[in-house]
Length: 424
Image (tube, rainbow, N blue to C red):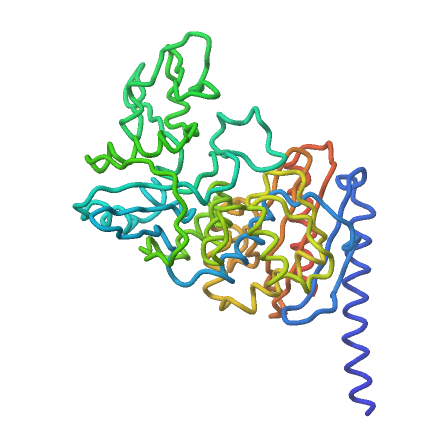
């Protein structure tokens, strides 16, 4: 009995010590002094926290939202992504998108959907009838239409819904896909490539800088534009037909799911995260609607979180999203139960090694595997930590409403979490 009491005391003191350390470090930090900060730390498989600081307060999560999209994907998809749904109707083939972003995507593996479409001999018709989203998510910045991180959301993306312009030689750009080369206009008033907002005319400067060898520009992607692009690539016409398909359809799988998850997490790819929520909708036989997919995921997979998430998009571009640190930790616990550690840590950015954490937590062996989340005045980090004592901890460190440089906040988060790694 005395031994059990002694062990319980050690555990309790350890928890108190971690909480005391955390509060002390945050309270005396000159970097964090004028902002909103919330932290939650727990051991894996344990509901009670090891340490916390304002972990019941709501924060704008930025790209930490992608952890919610990741869990939705894990809950609905298998080893492969459903790339296309189709109906063989007499001598016609009618296809519709699933939200899969991989078709002709420049940074993902080759999609089996392309070979499927190339091999069909009958006339092909595409229906977008089940797509209910707008091109942008709620709360997105309308003026960011030209920025690489905000491609439009569509039922059946092609080429990642972007054009990749490369500086081929002095004074010239090369467009990929080549389809867009004819849509380029030289313009002395621009310094980089700028698209006209509601049409795909791309203005480029007279002087091409070697400092910027490539630039990704979102396409204004209507159904007609998508079909023109796809028809040009396939060298055969695909026509538009706007009809519902209310019967069971056949499916073509495209790429391994983990290749999508890893790309999304490593570089914090907004487009992949948004499309993943449409894939979740497809898997649950919902219309292609991010709003309906999120409502379904919360009801069926996330009803047990400590605080109900205010979840509005797949990527975290929306400032309408609000999560608490303890809810982020509870979500990470659920992810850890679903995915073996070795596989999970390969998907997430790794401190000092890969993705958005390549230049932080530079220690060998790596001890941080986590998702960053950044907007102006927002920096969050949520994931997993291996301590020097051999423990696996789950943590969420959220920072909002700061006016100091993000680099300063990032370094302070790194300092405090490194000390947790060393002490606990």
